Amino acid sequence: MRLYLFNMITRRILAEIQDSLTFFPVVSIIGPRQVGKTTLTKQIISKNIKPTIYLDLEIQSDLFKLNDAELFLSQHSEKLIVIDEVQNKKDLYPLIRGLVDQHREPARFLLLGSASPELIRDSSESLAGRIAYHQLHPFDLSEIPETVSQTDLWVKGGFPNMIFTPKVELSHRWMENFISTYLNRDLLQLGLSASPKVIRNLWTMMAHLNGQLLNATTIGNSLGVTTPTVKRYIDFLEEAFLLKSLHPFHWNISKRLVKTPKIYLTDTGILHHLLGVTNFTSLSGNPILGSSWESFVFNQVSALKSNSIELHFYRTHHGAEVDLVFTRGLTVIATAEIKYSNSPHLTKGNFQAFDDLNAPMNYVITPFSDDYLFKERIRICSLQAFIFKYLKNLPPTP
Image 1 (tube, rainbow, N blue to C red):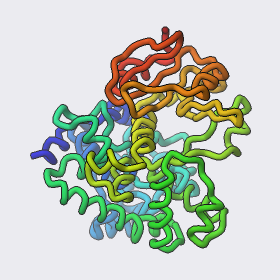
Image 2: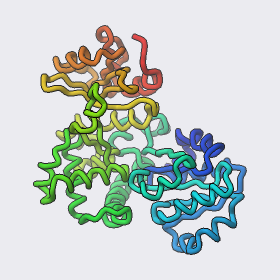
Image 3: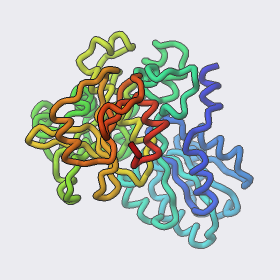
Image 4: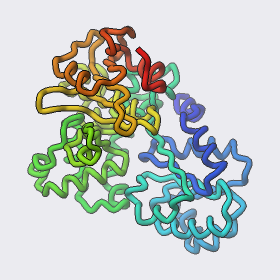
């Protein structure tokens, strides 16, 4: 019944994808495995007036149809051709470009993939100007039904099979299989030449270091690999949607990219599983509690913010710091400090950061506190108040 409910939920980006299909010849939905891309696509197909062919490249019979891909695809030029797990056949991209250029009209191809455009850059570049990408994140607070609480979403993460599987032990078994499949098959297929054991250890280390500044040298020493190798592995995991880096804010844009980022796991369900956290009680007594909440807020905000807004953090040698800096270009439009407390205490460093950045409004995001102006340009509010009341209206008015 709960999985049936998942199939009924309309994902937030559905309308955006449908809009892209009215203009772009090729539309791609990207995101981690098991995040709901196939279910979303079935919803799109059900609303699409154009005849559709669906190919899943993990099914041998569908993959066999593309032995002579040009012959097969050219015979269906009047249809929307959906290709799931397209990263399994990267040589399709140049062919799709040629077919689109021969017969250019909207909604020729809908491509689903578990790798970022950067990870398959050599092939996906051929579709430049012809393709629109849409990233599907795990479920966020704007999508979950009333039967799923904010705490449920935080503890279990946003993957459908974690939050909609009725038995807790089944959901944890699913998560272990999910992680094992990534390590032993998916990452290798995507081109990561590394031992699954090393990557599992790295992934677990990143869970323990979640939300902290990346120290690739220390991690490399622990894993027995070089610093450049650690950075390459982390970049790969980020492009596979398993990690996400947050770069420090600097007024000089070129300096932002060379300074040390923070690294977060993209889903708190994965984070908690790697750390052996099974429920809210075990999370509450775990030292990871604060960084887990910070990660949850960061992932929610990342998924729901406007594409025109960039996220950074701010930290100086003099002790000024704030968790999130919202910018449009060089303009700081807001900041946010993330606190796991409904009666948050701000540090001297927080106030110094607010003064340094001079944002129109500085938010303090809590789990469930009231929404009120604490001081001039400093507002305390719950995560849900921030997301549903303030995030879409940045920059705010006091």
